[in-house]
Picture 1 (cartoon, rainbow over the protein chains, first blue to last red):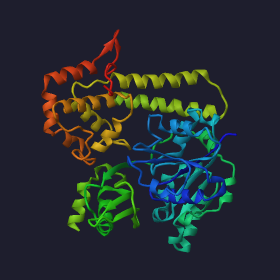
Picture 2 (picture 1 turned 180 degrees about the vertical axis):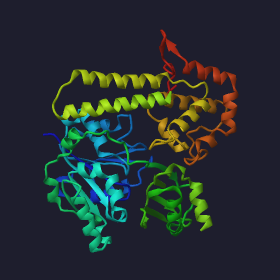
Picture 3 (picture 1 turned 120 degrees about the vertical axis):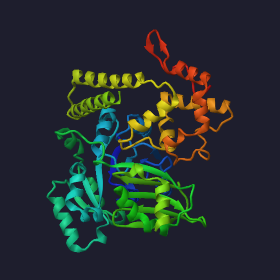
Length: 300
Length: 165
C-alpha cells in the first residue's frame, strides 16, 4: 500500500506547525514522518516537534518549491519505504502547486497517494486586508482540499462572518477553523482534488506570492530583549514592507525568546532551546540586516 | 548571460507544468517529455558554461544575479548554503578558496565565528585576506586553470578538483 502524503502550506506564522502538532495527535498519524522545510539553516521550528517520535526530516536553507535541486524528491524517496503517512510542512512562501508539479514530475505519485492538501489562513491578516489577502492566496485557497482558518478567535463575530463569506465566494473546496491548531479531523477524509485542480490550471504558476523575498538573520551574535523587538517591529515592518518575522532571540541574561510577528501582532514566548535565527519575509526583506534591527532598537 | 538563463528557466518551467499535467491525466507524450528533458539539459549546459575569471567576479555575480530572487545570495549564510551542495561547481570554488586561504594561514570562509552569517557579500570583498589572495598570480593561475578547464573541447570546469583532497 502506498503511504499517504499530506501537504501543509500557509504564510509564515499562520500556524502551520501548531496545526501539524494537532494533526500528529490523531491515532492514524502517530507514526507519520515529517518533511519540514525551513529557511533558516538550522530549524527554528523543529524543537516544537520534539515530542513526536517518528522521523522528522528538515530541509533547511532552501525553499523546496523553487529550488532547482532534488532535496524534496530525495527526502520523499527516503521515506517511501514505510507505509506510514508523510506530511510535508512547507516554508512560509512556498507554492503548493509548484510542490505538486515537483512531486508529479519526480514520479512520486507511483510511490505516494496525495491524501490531503491543507492551507492555513491567518484570520487576522486576512481580515485586515480581505480583498488583497484573498487575491494573493487565491490559487492556494482554491487548490487546497481544506482551508483552515487560524486565529479567528481573535476577531469579532462580524469580521469572522465577512471572512467566511468572502472565502465561500472564492470557490474553495472546504473551509473550517483551526484555532490553536484544533480542527475537525473528519474534514481530512474528503477526497483530494488538488491534482485535478493542477491539471486544469490554465495559467503559469508563480513560485511565490508576488514580491515576497526573505532573509535570515543570525541573532546569536547579539543580545536582544523581546520587549525591544516588540516595540520596533512596526517600525521595521513599515520601513521595509515586512509581512512576517519568526524565530528566536536571546536576551542578555540568557533567556531565549521565540518571536512570531505578523502585521498585527508580535507574539513573544519563552523558549528553552533552538536556533538563534530570525526569518524575515516581505517586499524588501532582503534589506533587513541585524544592523538595521539594532539601529531601530537604538532609536526607539 | 543571466538574462538568457532566466529565459531558459521560464521555458523549462512551461514544459515542467505541461509534463506534470499530462502525467496526472495519464497521457504519455514522448515529444513533450523529450522537450522537457532538452530544456533541463540546456539549462544545465548554460550554467556549466558560465565562467568567472576570479573569485570576486564570481561572488559579485552571485550577489547581483540572485538579488531579485526569493532566495537571494546576500550574506555569508546565503553564500555558504549556496556553496554546500556536494559535487556542485560552486562548492568546489568555495572549497578551493578556503584551501588556499588556509595555505596562507588565513581564516576559512567556513569559520562562522570570524565570518558571521550576517556579513554582506559586498563587505566580504573588502577582506584583506581575500584581496591578497586574488592578487596572488599563482592562485589566479590555478583558479583559471580549473575555471577554464576543457577535456576534448568539452567544458570541464573544476572537474579535476576534488573538495576532499
